[in-house]
Image (cartoon, rainbow over all chains, first blue to last red; front, side, top):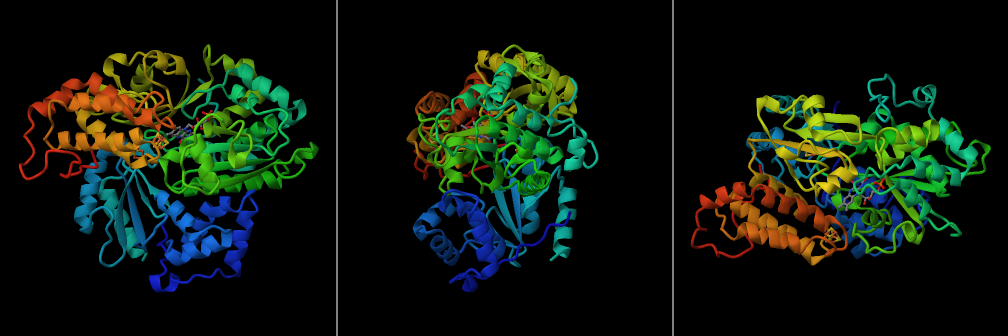
Length: 174
Length: 437
Ligand SMILES: Cc1cc2nc3c(=O)[nH]c(=O)nc-3n(C[C@H](O)[C@H](O)[C@H](O)COP(=O)(O)O)c2cc1C
Ligand code: SF4
Ligand code: FES
C-alpha cells in the first residue's frame, strides 16, 4: 500500500472559488441521488476536500451558493464533523486512535514515540509541512490495535519499528 | 458452527459478483421478488431476527411499522457507521462479502416498498465505501438493481453516503439528519423513523450485519435461522474481540455462547498469562462486567438480565494490569468528545466526569469523587436525554465505580491536594491525559 500525499491548495488560491465544468458536473450527478438539494452537502464537501485539500471560507461560500443554502449554515455543518479540514493540512495526516482497545494494546507508547520522533504534539504539523499528528477516536479496527489512519489508508497492528518503516516510506513518497 | 455471514472470508476473489453468484448469491433476492413483500416480512418475523446495531429490536416488527397506506416515497438506510468503541464487524463483512449486504438491502427495501436505499458509512471507511460502490455497480450491470429489476416491475437505487467523523451519526435519527445535509443532532422520538424518517418519509434504518442475515433467511428459511442460538435470541452473531486476548478478531458464533467460551476457547485466553479483570460485553456503551460474570451468555436477554447489554457485540477484554480509573477516564473522554451537545445532562455531565477522572488520574482525587460521579451519571441516564448517548456514557462509568470502587479509593487514598494556586473548583485545568491508560 502506498498512501498518496494530499494535494493542498494554498489559502490565497481558495479565497474565491468557482467550480469548473468537471466539478460542476460531478456536483450535479451527486445532487440527483437525493430528493433535496441540501442532502448533497456532505458529499459535495467531500468532493471539494478532494479537490482543494481543505474547506476554506471561499469553498464554503461557493458550496452554499451552489446548493442554495447560506454560508453560515454550511459553516455550521462543516464545524460539526471532525474530518473536514478547516485549515490547510500537512501532506500526510497521521490520525492515531486514542480509544480504549488501542490505548491498552500499545497505542499510548505509539503516540509517545510519534511525538518524540516528529517533535510535534496533537494538532500540530512538522515545520516542513509533511506530517500532522491528530488524536482521533475509535477507528473501527480495534482487533488490530494499535491503529493509525494516514490520509485515507488504515495502518494496523503497528509497533514502533513498523511505524518507523512506514514514516520512512511516506517520506520517500513525497 | 458453520460460517454463514463470514463464509466468504478466506475465499479468493470473494468480493466479485461472479464468486458471489457461484455460491448461490442473489437467490434470496429472486425468491423475495417472487413471493412479494408481505411474505418477506413474515419470513423475517418468523426467524425472530433481532437488530445487530445495538438495541436488538426485532427486525420484522420494525419493518411492519411502516404505514401500509403511505403513498410513498419510503427509504431504507443501511447503517454502516460502525463507531462504537470495540466494534469492527461491519467492516469485516464488507471487506469479504459486500454483495451479501447489497442483497440484504435489496430484500429489505422490497419488503417495505422503498425504491431508494442509502448506505450511510462512516467517513473514515474510504476503502470500504469504494468496495460497496463497486459491488453496487456490478449488481446494477447484472440487472439486479436499477429500473424494473429482473422484470418484476420493482425499481431500486442504492447510494453510498459517506459520513464525516461523528460517532453520534450512528444513532438512527442523527444519521437521518446527517443524511439530509445537517449537523448530526438526534431527534426526539416519537415520531419514530418508520413513520417520519428521512426527508419526512417512512424510513427503516438497519445495521449492516442485520441486513446481511436477511438473504440467508430468504434462501434457507426462518426455521433454519431460528434453530441457531436460543429462543428469542436466534441466529449467528459476529463478536468482535479486542484488548488483552491472545487472538483478537471477529468470530461468528451462535447467540447464547458464554463470554468464557468466547474469551478462553476462541480467543486463546488472556495475553501473557495474566488474569481477566473485566470486560465490556457489547461495546464501551454497555455496563462493564467483572471476571466473575464471565459465564453469562452472550445474547440480548441474558445480558439484559445481568444489567448490561449485548449492544453491538464488541467484547473489550481487560486484564489485571489495568486500573479502572484509567479505563473510565478514557471512556469519559470518548463520550465527552462525541456528545452532540443538545442536552445539558449529556453535554455537561460527560465533560464533568472526564474532568473529575482526569483529576483523580493526575493524583488529586477527593473522597467525594466516586459519589459525585455516580450522581452525575444518575441524572444523565434513563430517559433524561434526547438520545441514548446520555445512558451510553453514564451506565459504563457508574458500573465501573460500583464494581471496582476499590480502584478509585486506592487512587484517592494516595492523592495529594491540588497545588494551592489552582482554584480547587472545576473545571480541571491540570494535565489532560486524554489517553487514560
Ligand atoms: C449513540 C448511538 C450510536 C449508535 N451507533 C450505531 C452504529 O455505529 N451502527 C449501527 O448500526 N447502529 C448504531 N446505533 C443504533 C442505531 O440507532 C439503530 O438502532 C440501528 O442502526 C438499528 O439497526 P438494527 O435494528 O439493525 O439494529 C447507535 C445508537 C446510539 C444511541
Ligand atoms: S443525549 Fe447527548 S448525544 Fe444524545 S441528543 Fe442529547 S446531547 Fe446529543
Ligand atoms: S479502539 Fe482503536 S480502532 Fe477501536
